[in-house]
Length: 182
Image (cartoon, rainbow, N blue to C red; front, side, top):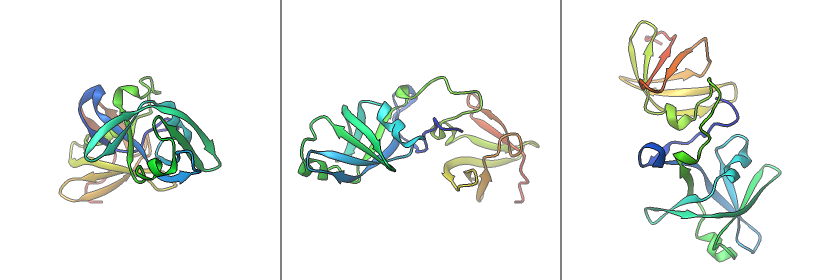
């Protein structure tokens, strides 16, 4: 799970047409409709590689082409088609930004995964004990963590070859070296 990952959950849909949330509109920049974007991609500016963006408004996802974008310090700034002044931009504050799963890079390295593809997978120990399903993932600074929901919640560190022994997307399973009592 390296720099190309997307960290948010799928939003709706199925297969290559499902939507994957990549971030949200977090602020305004200037008076010409530019937006500050909180990005869950790595690096942050990778969110600018996708167009159209799907914005959730009034319970519906609407495609909006990205006209321009750039990283400015720690911020990601974006200019969307039809968003030409600050008042239009203000209506987008807090709106989630998603793309279709089919827009994401398909050829990841063998040990790289999009978080959205790991969510929902069954987690089992080397001995075959079922621990539950991946609810979501989170960053901790030291390593990423799988949040597994079963008979109770477990937090498993994403440490390949030590804890994470195998990811089989086709079978919908992650095999882990983990004590079920922990």
